[in-house]
Length: 123
Image (cartoon, rainbow, N blue to C red):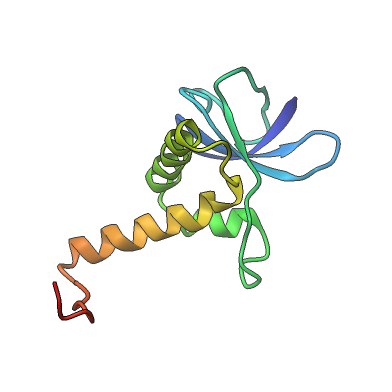
């Protein structure tokens, strides 16, 4: 499959448009974005994970959703999904952006020393 790069997230992640149907995809793979620029075409090989981004209504496109999340969390979410696929038969790839957003939120709370008090008194 051939994709046109919309945005380089980092060396291992990019947002691309599938040639032919124009749908946006997030591609994760070792070095997939290295030396590339927006507008370049890329052909995926084995080992590249392809995700269809699911975005909230107010974001309107994957570019807005991806811009709101640090690429390191998108890459980490991809690794979590890849590990989960080894344990379970299949994992819905639609969870990539929500999982990345959740990881970013949890990391920000940790950096800011914010925590949730346990509602359950048995802890």
